[in-house]
Image (cartoon, rainbow, N blue to C red):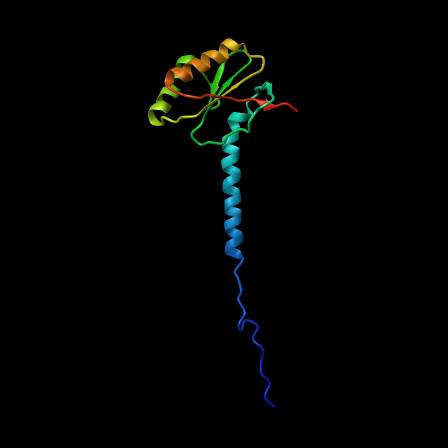
Length: 138
């Protein structure tokens, strides 16, 4: 009597999951690192004022984020800068990219004069619409 063996892979399609899982983990790690790197500027100890129509925080790679502390100090990329340094930074960015985006994050206890000084520097450099960051009212 002849007994035939049954082949499991006859006519069936199999998908290798190992390369797919590897790619998913690599993408996950990439996005976690990219998000963490960009969040450092937004995690400064700045108490933003409330606003009824606050928009979501934009995540643009070309965006310059200017933090204004309660004492009126200016922080860009995690370091204190003077008004002249900020002017140089913004002018250089506008020379490179005419559509440069700037977000100004002023502490709610900051004197308006400090915010106006930063806005004036941005407008003088050619930034058409600097964005004032706020948080939505709970």
